[in-house]
Image 1: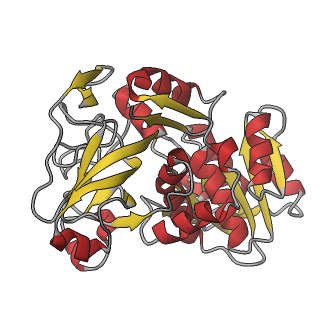
Image 2: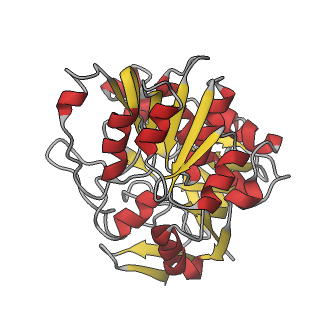
Length: 355
């Protein structure tokens, strides 16, 4: 089959590789769509701060790995054990959560599977090859969800970034009175806007540097939008909150300036949620977190327990999915896809579609 294979930073190649084989309790899946994430781009350039062991954090995927961690496909082979465990059968369209937990470490045993210590995420380690290929295998320990065949493959694959977005929103602990600011109107930011509105936030504000993305943010539920190139976002947020600042700031832009902006935009005792994967270190004056405002600062990782809600939201038609899923390319054009995501001005969600 055709597959993209990582040979190191900025050395990804389209190759002919053996089609994988499903072992006992596994599923062989024909890939229908694989989204390209901003973390894929940073990983490609060797700049992403990803998941390593206690001795360090590698900046790129392991070599000989097929990338791709947001995907959907059709089951073409599985045994009775797999069918019973996941409640699926041959011919079903299925997505698998990004992480394949070990179910043995302290985090898995406590039900915190998304922080699994080995942290085998599709497309980054040899143990879990990803979806930039014609076929892939869902291992025994995977978390598998059915997705309707009535929606386009690229829309179905959006379940991964949307689940991440919804988890970030849950980490914010939004209440009905909250003014919530979401920085960055990429795929995850747009999902966060929709999620924050669904959670009942009083006012949702979207920040971005591109007007077409801000228009899309309104379509996803934003009550107000701010173009950060044309307006002073912190001043605007303070003006709409009586000078106090927002209650919740969710960072999904992945740029260091968005972190400083958020700390300044928050009111005292506000909540800052960080979701992005950064390509460089971020430096801030921590006094604003402690002595100045006593902020709650929370991280968010992956999309635990949010996949059913994300899939239901996509299937319901309430999101402008045709406008979100802007580009679908053949796998052979993966470099063009990476460049589109890296540039960010012309695309929202870019997906690869195997031939």
